[in-house]
Amino acid sequence: MEIILLQDIKGLGKKGETKSVNDGYANNFLIKKGLAIKKTEGSVSFLEKEKAEEAKKQEELKEEAIKNKEKLDTIVLEFKAKAQAKGAMAGSISTKEVEGKLKKEYGISIDKRKFVEKYPINSFGYTNLKIELYKGIIATIRVHISEEK
Image (tube, rainbow, N blue to C red):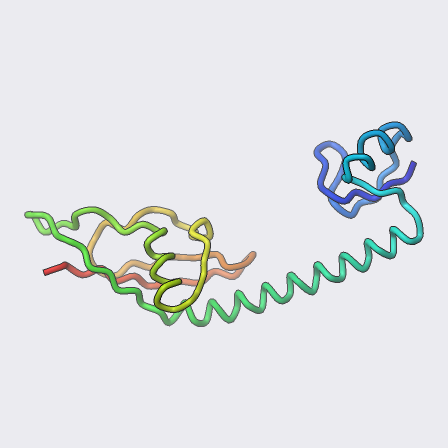
């Protein structure tokens, strides 16, 4: 039986691919669980329409990422931290704190998992953090940490 996969299935194929499988496997497992549909003219046209919508959605996400990159490249986030007796920074600034400040001050919502280098900042001065907004679109944000008096 010819089927069209609705999801990625390990060992069988990727979403949108057409595969030939046994009738029992198709009817009793794949179609029943909503992982695939039987290949017909209607299902093929439905799949093509869905692919076009997904491509349009991805293009919109890419455009939004480019706009956010332009904003983020000009932003310098200011943090204050306490210093230890020897002048070193006490504690650190995490990517979660950077993400929270971006959302609070600039209204830009970025998932903390999008940071390329996920190490906490533990020194005074300027630090550049890279954020992957979309596949291949990486923005750099500057973080300045000064000593709290």
